[in-house]
Length: 199
Image 1: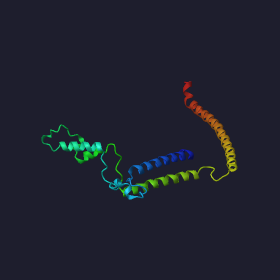
Image 2 (image 1 turned 60 degrees about the vertical axis):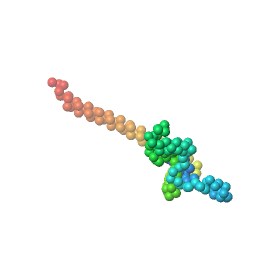
Image 3 (image 1 turned 90 degrees about the vertical axis):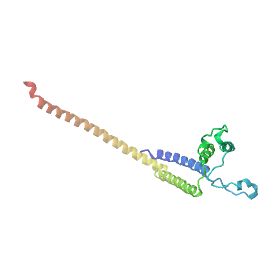
Image 4 (image 1 turned 180 degrees about the vertical axis):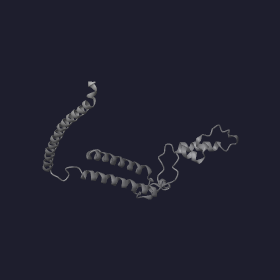
């Protein structure tokens, strides 16, 4: 398990990624309505004609020209227009829609879906922020002065020296016990096989 500082850095990186993803979603899937309505409603008459949350995005002029050319060639009998229908005309309206969407941003979400996803993204940001606050609260030394922390470090150093001395003593005991066991095994081995060598 990683230490608290590593976990904190990971959470901060994840929070930054979540911020970026949230802003990306909001700018990509909103319904393009202005945040502040213009003071003069006649100032942008073309915008008033655009429907919000339309199911089909606008088609670029180049794609519209291709669609007009293919539709003019398709009513003729025998298909002698010289234009071979491509995938855009083969699928009907869906094929034309796919041809027009290649360079366009994705369609905006419905207001209900957009609001639900906004709530979900906001909830995820709050949860990640709460994780960061918890990790900060459990950092050692939070709420104690520098003198108290130095005193605690000295106490831990003394405790560490005592544990190290105990470990060295146990290692010496282990060596003594190993020599005893080797002696006992050697005696048992001589007792079992010792009589066979005198024959």
